[in-house]
Length: 415
Image 1 (tube, rainbow, N blue to C red):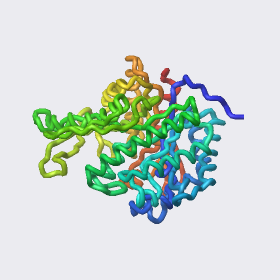
Image 2 (cartoon, rainbow, N blue to C red; image 1 turned 90 degrees about the vertical axis):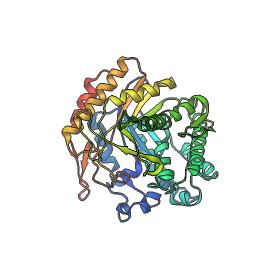
Image 3 (cartoon, rainbow, N blue to C red; image 1 turned 30 degrees about the horizontal axis):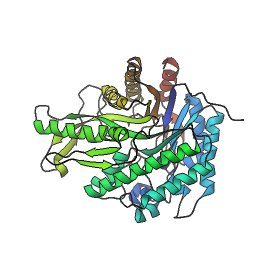
Image 4 (cartoon, rainbow, N blue to C red; image 1 turned 180 degrees about the vertical axis):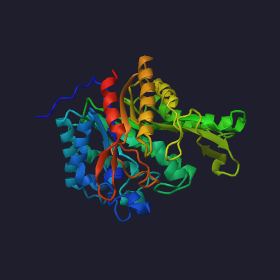
């Protein structure tokens, strides 16, 4: 008999994504990054998942955010792998049996290879193909209340359609806006489909938000770029949920207004927060903007060169509060080999979280990224986010001191 999970408790959890743990031979990223060409399942999580799920119990979390790998569920167009669906259902059953709330992400950056070749997001048929996948999941999977339709849709657009560093590898602003519209249409329709199947479901997106600032505060162009970036990257998606329109503002050009059917289709907002980014005007760079990090607060930089800026978490939560829906921090973590640095990062951000709750912000959960070391997009295997280290040769998992500290924090903080 499955344990009923209380709906009013604060969600203390960890977050992962399927592809970053288990890979997939059918996914676009497997051929995109040569690191994965020989062994896409770098952690062997797909076979060792039961051992990894025991780590959740060891940590003492009451929630776990993970994703379904679409390319495993639908390896070829019109072909469904029911063993893969049963695999994810088993993960859910194990979580519920251990009184751990599952939070499922339907799309976490990766696609089946056939989809990205034939129906990329800027093409209208992509909507139907994604919704077919959602329909199959909903007709098969049971026991999930919390759903994330898309993880960081703006990161997907920036990487896949402006920088060209992620599939489908485009550099075209017009195609980016078409893709944005289609992705948000998918969210709106998936929201309705999930609620038709699960009336009390909680549905959201995981929105990556950053603290954004001018590199040179005295420079008017740096200030303008920071203002534009702050609106588009942090606020425009929030406004779309309030108004049903995405406003795209360009410097010295007329703004665009894109209708999207997502008004009020949000039961909570997932907030992913990692860093502060400084904007510097550089006429020799694409779009005239250069992104920089520097250590201002004295917390240092991560192994990926990102600034550690805990106060930025309060800023983005304040922005997100205008939606008047509950907030859940669905990702927050640091890439570092140092347990001491990881502990300091964790404590400083949870201190800010606690302060926000005392101020009346409706924050109902915190998910640390990540449970174990995994493949990091564009970075490979050296960016160590995990509370548990992974030896990628022996596949041995070992707890870091930060894992023990997180267990202590969850017990000692009264949220």
